[in-house]
Amino acid sequence: MFTSRKKQKIITEHKVHEKDTGSSEIQIALLSKRIDELVDHLKHHSKDHHSRRGLLGMVSKRRKFLDYLKKTNTKSYSAMVKKMELKK
Image (cartoon, rainbow, N blue to C red; front, top):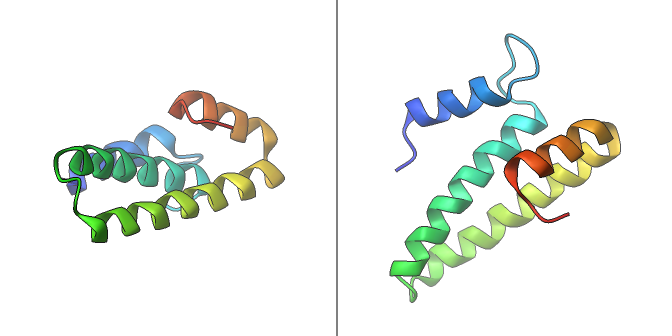
């Protein structure tokens, strides 16, 4: 389950400045955590097609955030991909 403590921990790890709560880096990290949890859920419940559809939406949303970050801040993009262990 994705609790507010987990979410706050992810935000503090990836924030760009002190009051940062919605930068691309944070959005990517939060989506990645939710994707990981949903993948684990789908390993046990292979016929849950509604969750699978949600997973595909989250993956495409994360891809869009990564594309935006690549255009605006290449250094931060490469650091995020390396830190989150994502495919380029």
